[in-house]
Length: 415
Image 1: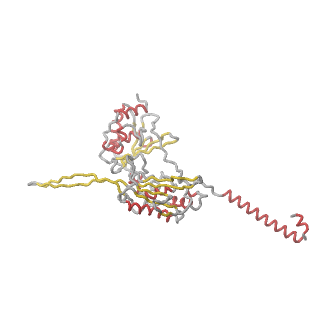
Image 2: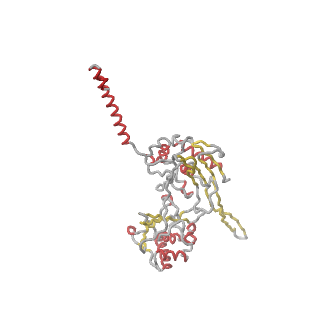
Image 3: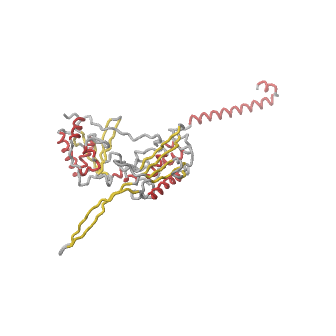
């Protein structure tokens, strides 16, 4: 190139040199801008599994043999709503159950012997090495209902009319009885699982909050904006998932579980918040009953600011996030009586909050039960026959069986 310029006249040589300088400068500036763009780009926070093609096909197969057509309509509505709210960034197409659908939706009878009535189970079932969901399944279960039907009979004698009442329990499973208005909350929740979205544990009004009970589902009235934006991003800008921040995408993390624990020392301090004198009396009676059987001072009543365990009264179960450790008055009507909330730090217990939803009930078995939670005995796999019956705590006799007495003494070295 220098030899070629040397042979040209001075005028043309200057023109060519000026052109080269301008072109070179432009090239360098483009390269600098590219480097700056690369350095300032937002790195993906995580990788997301997604279906590789649109529309995503789904099939519906109902096997519950109940009011199934009602549920089929709600399933279709849930798919349509996700499609509409994402502005068709995600699209679906229904196919026959005999076709090889991407998402297989089934309406089934609920599993037997479940502690909670499960409304649905869902998630990816087949994945590809390139982080794609090739197949997913959604299983939906009808809701359980129960009520008492009153049969009346009248008897007459010469002077009086007598009325006889007989209360008959009516119970069963239904798609329609336990539905929640126009919003297909359960169906949407499970379809989002199939799309790779995990649970949200800190907001019980989010559509992805764990659905454990029928009383929970009707809180949700729409898909939140954050979930919609994340969905739109996954299927339009998968290289940049900054809009999915703090959303648990597949493979999602399970809710942490911990075994029973014990306090470092006894007695365990406790206090009450917004509780009546009657509720305070109920707790003190339950406390003395437990301590009398164990033969040791287990609890100490203190001011709220000094307590490791706080009992909260006057709280509606609609205002807190319900979890697996909810205690019930009766398993038939799903009425929460109380819930212990455990706070841990580095796997060490910090404190316990116990919500008494039914503090005005005549039956007082729940305080006895919750004080055992306060000692570190947790839900799920309870120790002893009595303590396992948390779905019927109102009928419990407040008697510690030998197995639980032995476990308390062993755990706290009270021999």
